[in-house]
Length: 232
Image (cartoon, rainbow, N blue to C red; front, side):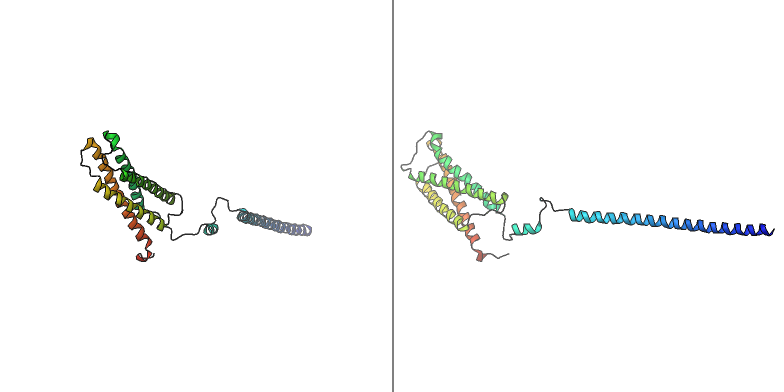
């Protein structure tokens, strides 16, 4: 009996020791699993952070992407740049049409009516043809300057003293032509088989050219007198 009792005690001790050993092994295995899971998560996070750093370092600005610093250096902002005035463009277009109309109607009076020049001297008429052509070229040039300034970038405009000088000269020339044509070339409407209708229509365009260049002269003068305008 004593031997049996002692054997049971030894068996109980061994079983308890085995249980303790198994529980310790389970705890160590669980700790190992948790540590491996934590280490894996940390490794993943560290790998993601390294990838982000490498992306930030390796990303280079493309050649097409604008550099604001370079743009400020290459193209400084011009606060004094103004878009061209549309009113000037309209007047220049009318000057083109009026120059063509004055030239075409007065030179076409003879072919239309089959009547030769009805006045004694034609010197004034040739003078009028000449300034019509000069006006046409100047108005076309100013329209070209307007379009390049409006759609071609910040290009330069015609210097105001030059524009003022040409406009006032053409205003004076057309004023002389209109005055002398109304004074000397007096042609009643309906006479000479329609010759006077054409010639008088050309006089109307001459008078409109004189008034348009007079307006542009005053416009240039006012634009050049900066003392009369308030600075922005």
